[in-house]
Length: 151
Image 1 (tube, rainbow, N blue to C red):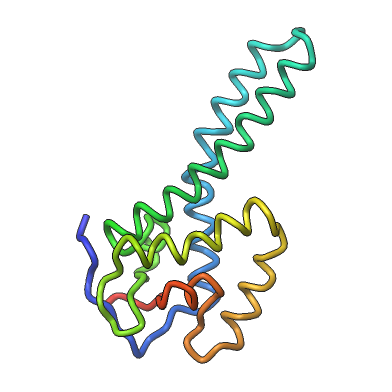
Image 2 (image 1 turned 30 degrees about the horizontal axis):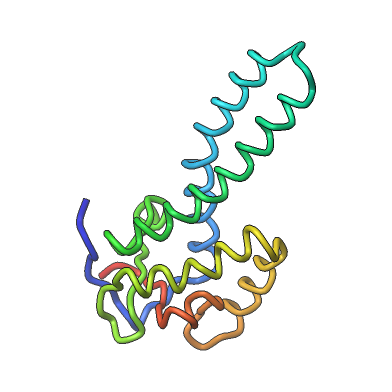
């Protein structure tokens, strides 16, 4: 996998590509969790419902953590997630430079807060991407990043 491919700052990634990339990333992360959870639930079938609730809570919490860490690590290391790679988009600094750990953490901290604290933050992200000149969600603004097409 190519690290931090060249990007075209003039061509911002729109809502469609960003949405599909997010769905692909969600599927990539959620599929193993779903399979493992189904297996655990099958093993716990007939057990005390408290154990099933604990398993559900554990998988729900760990999915959120893994999902946010995946975005942070992939974008800091490669400049994209696998979903973004599939659609030919990349995260870059507002100046076009590759992003580092600080920018990745900053932009994904808002994703983390959205997943945990403000579940309807996706609506705000859609609105901001649609109306902002640089097609940035709040996390992009905080991290001084843009999502653009690969060159």
